[in-house]
Image (tube, rainbow, N blue to C red; front, side, top):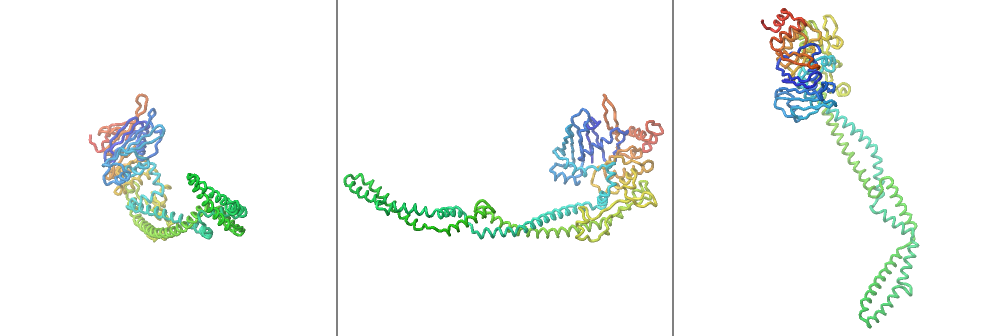
Length: 566
């Protein structure tokens, strides 16, 4: 229930605060007094669009605050919990609009977003005005109204969720299937690449060894000459290095006999001689292994060309080529995994498809079953609202008859997130006339009564605490207006009602009556709202009855309408 609303610097309202009661609250006043401004403020609380144009001239920002009393069992409780917003039976919403166009929202003191506010709004207030009349003319909304009547909304939401899950899973499977197709197309190439790399039998470091061997083979003749001459100089020649060292050793023996201090030098000379002998032998062995081998040179060159070709195709080094081969092998493993995953997805899809078809079939059957009951209820209410003889029908647009099993091929062609049913409300307000869509036949007054009839029928199913009726009196008057007033009073047993009206028949049914006025003070236009006492209410009803001239007769009529004796 909307307990209180405070509006500051909004349009022509500088400061206004009003407390509403349960039951039927009436708001009346002259045209242009500011009643619609209050509705606009309520829409802001519901997450409606904000504009700097709404800020009162001279002010920096506009502020709207609303306090709601909410039953603990309300769906709003769970919604607030999901949003981590504290809740103790009251919801305080505060929204500001700045000149820069920025909007800020607080819910129970916590900073919130417009998306959060929009989710909560439908559980707080339902505003029925010209906009909702337009929604009633759209067949897309008729399905939801029928579901509300039949208590099928939860089933439809469940179907929505299953539908989204199914198609999200289907899209995932299709992406995976397309990916597998691409991988399969690349698989033959990958297998060729793996085979080419494996047949090369590459060894890390092989390239540098082959380059060194190639250099030796290319310069083998010169290398043999260098090694041979080095060996000859050390060992074979008559005046070889080792021969000279041998003679020096003999002389050094003589010198040691003369001076023992030469012994250390003699030992160093002997050590050098031994090292040179080893070197000479190694050079001889190395020379013996050297040979001119054009065939081996050709083999090495071919091997190096193979490695260069593989590097050009698969990576800058043998290590990177081998890593690429490993990656190709992993792709094959992942391809097998993806195939297994696709099988799992297809099994899940089949399971969800069966559930989706079963749920959609059952929901369609129930809709067809409740459609006739809904028709009777609407016709009964319209008869009470001054539209006797009106025929009302729920026309299903699909070619299926209710309850037919939905086949799998209907998933993409017929099934939507709301089911397989496409329906539209048809009406004939005049006896003998054909049934036609509401949008083509209903007048403004008829739409108001149809809306009220639906609200009355859905009252016992509705979870929204507060209903706002703006211009529900459009196109009606006399006895019909009195009947509409009675209906509003009856509806107020289930909901808090805020009704903006110009009709005395509706205004006289209210439990609480507020007067909205516009005055000019200190050169500025301001809007005021006043809770009327008994006498003020009589005067306002009389004004609605008689306009500017209020006679004793008019006042007596007003007293009679609200059941007050003079």
